[in-house]
Length: 290
Figure 1 (cartoon, rainbow, N blue to C red):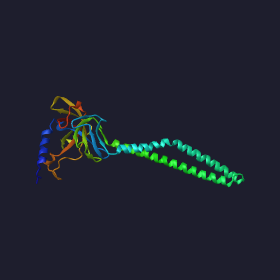
Figure 2: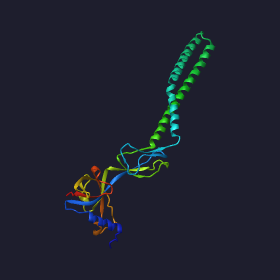
Figure 3: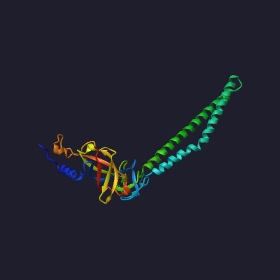
Figure 4: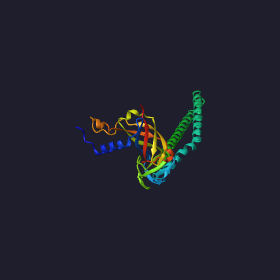
């Protein structure tokens, strides 16, 4: 007994019947122009401070779309920069401490030799030992301060990178499609602020009947026709063929139901001078392989 078809199945079958036409060597199917959408999200949480682009605005690669802020971040960066700058001012102090420590160590070595010969007094030897210990401690303290300054420099770089993560840049040329936030809102990391449509990389979504899919292959050249440009055929190529049918009424199919099976295909094209708009219906003319 045949399975009952759902309304969606009937509509899809009707679409295929109306959209799949052509000769035995050329298949013409109906398709729709789509564009890729990129959602811009910050890598760190913050308050939306500036929104430089709004819905419908054009953007170019590298354009600043939005800027977020974190209270106190600028002051923290300046503090860590000041600590980091201390490292360069203490370079001379390190060299002086190293020279002092080396000189006293040499004096102590000579005094020990002279003490064994009975020339240097025990008091002189003890004084030099104390001076050498003090010089070594001073050198260790200066070196520790420099290491702390270097750690502060690394901390300043990390903090500055957080500020960079609060600036949203457009990854490509396109148009702002949707704004998800308003100025003053607190945005968590990973939450989109705007979406950008990559209008210069349109592609076509179409469906091919099961009986034709074996005569198609990826990379195959096709032609695109649009009602608004009846005398122009745009170039395209099949970039993807779905590995699974879109419509499967049930596991065991009758002959009639197998005719309703369709496979989605993706057709890539250039920007066609910006004439192919999202949502525009097109006719895809596909030369069938033997």
